[in-house]
Length: 620
Image 1 (cartoon, rainbow, N blue to C red):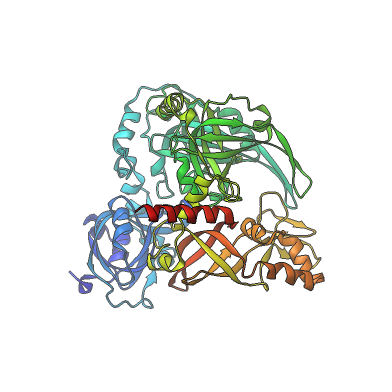
Image 2 (tube, rainbow, N blue to C red):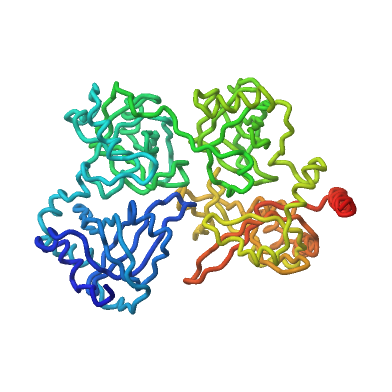
């Protein structure tokens, strides 16, 4: 089979011709465009556009097709044969999609005529009467739970559904009409806008407080919870009167049947969960408490070892488990806006022989009373890279003391037998203050820029980190900062209005002045190569020793002092920790280099390291 086997109007016929629909999805199509999922945005959608030469439609790849897509590297023009899948219609939005479960590549990068292809949504959206009844009535296999595909994780979604369906449960109805006990149960991982009728059986793993807001558009309430089953977790939100209603109904730790909540794309900035969608609970949502808690876990963690956090991206979220080594006293912080916060730092360690500081905030900081030596598991804690790596609790983070899970028992056993006498490497210490052994470790990890380029660092899926000793050869002083929202924890770019206020579209507020934040570019060189490096706010402030707002003011009112500050770092030598990651711009691939951390050189540590290396060489 080849490009000649692509049949014009075959895509249209799949949605409009009863006989073609009955033949099944097996067909030959050409790839018009591709989009793989980005793990850093937690999106798991693998979408391509396929064409029959006359019409094109979105195809959502799942199961075997998704796995092949991540490894086979499809391109525009490729000819594929769909082996398993189904057409589906989202009636209320007049959207058409091909759900593809398996495919094979027949020909690579065949000639492609994009201009003659018509988007199926555009054509059939105006001709809904032509869509076959099976799709009009949402009775296609995509909408039927019995035909839902097995999940691509370690559990079998169909057997999971069957166990839940067959379980003898009892429930008391809270909302809506009709019990959900007898309805087929979907796994949370399977939920997407392409299923119209579903019910989940899940535990409330996290329940937030009702939050209120006031802005120019009015005021309102927000409530959110996380639902958990064997397959994963999903966030659910409710607003205003429904926030109060569902906050009273849902209790943390209890199991419920949930259905008829709207599915919408997740907002990564507000959740630490990996599900690409979230639930919106409203007047149609049905919640029933379930007394049968079988097959529903109490907690779900995806733990990482502390030694791996060194290579985690700043502001990413992780799950960790550790032994409390130190509990520091509570103290108070005041933000630039004048708001006061309670803070307490604790240090945890694990069997990777690393330690890290965890910041606790507000009521948790005040109430924390666990003794040193206790086990804590923390879900969704945020990674900070200021002055090394540390962790900080966010509004959706959860701290579980002494959890009854195998990882906790193993860690406690290790600590009681030998861990309490171990020496731990801190992820937050500066190279200038660490002991000689740790300094030698950091110095010994360095490579040259030439080796970083030769090894193609940055081409891996998650990017690569490396350390290099280099000199700042140039600093771009024309555009070094941007005006950011001055509201707490926002940092989005703001736009100056006609009345000289600064508008933040995210917060929907106008503020008298922005808070300037660094977006600095410098050139660095070592003995082998030159590289352009990007520095965000914390790292740039560490380099220049002044915050962006003050430097912006100096540029406008004291150019001489501004020049002194920006020039004093030029030709100065630093130890840079760099993150390399592939970036696509104008359909061209390039490696972007970002400074994750930097230190002034500790010349005593440098000399000690060189002396140690010379001693080793003389002994050989």
